[in-house]
Image (cartoon, rainbow, N blue to C red; front, side, top):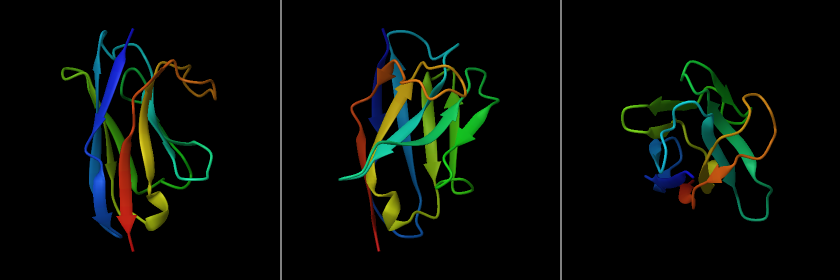
Length: 121
């Protein structure tokens, strides 16, 4: 069993930056895919980014490519999402997720509770 706890959300102005973190406990992140999804009010959950178990492979949703960067620190058992050039449409609850086949659309096995990111115009 893996427990995921997000932190770092908040309010930021458009054009600004924010970094959210996801700390895992229960078992190491090693060997499993981890990533981020988001859900805005009235919208479906959207894939944001994923990182392979090795940390070498990364994948991004089209709406965040070139602005967001996902990374992982194996020693700290933590995954990060650096968000730059934020836009009001990035406003959403951001969820950390882990353990799904790389490159698939299968549902991740583990989810965090979510952290709110609000971008003001």
